[in-house]
Every structure is written in C-alpha cells, then in structure tokens.
Image (cartoon, rainbow, N blue to C red):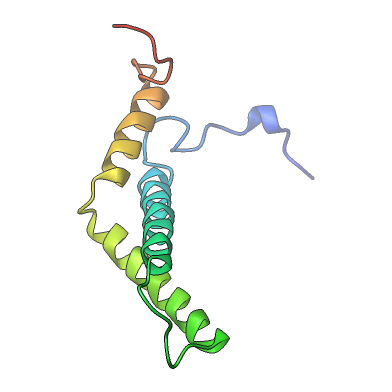
Length: 103
C-alpha cells in the first residue's frame, strides 16, 4: 500500500536540518563557471597547434573539466561560497539580495 504524500514528514533539508546538497551544488556551479573561463582562455591562442586534432581537443576539454572540478573543490575563488551564502539566506527566509532593490 502506498503512503499519501501529505502524511510523509518533511525531509531534513526541508526542515532546515541539513544542507540538502547546497554545498555540492554551489561547487558544481563554480566548476561550470571555471570550465567556461578555461575554454575562453583556450580560444585566445596565438598560433596554430602543430599537433592539433579533434582527439587532442577532446582530451584538453576533459583535462580542463577535471581541473575546473579540482579548483572548485578547493573553494579558492569564492564563487561557491557566495552562492551557498545567498541561497542559505533564501532558505532561511532572510534578506537574499535577489530583488536588486535599494537597502
């Protein structure tokens, strides 16, 4: 027999008793930003690559993705920290700064 949705208690994340993956999501967002940054830097090359091929490009993209994930995990840029802080304020019902109004 199935349990009605209304009788199921709130999850720890919804009840405020856990981060609900917010930290992980913020790091993933920072990794996406860093991947885009690395891709933009790769486009600014000064000359043709003598060993260039589509396979080399694919491996560079994979290496850049791994590098971006590693940098995001170190949390040195602060993007993940800002995103996490902002969304924790939204989840707690505090001022979020998302409205863009004058305070």
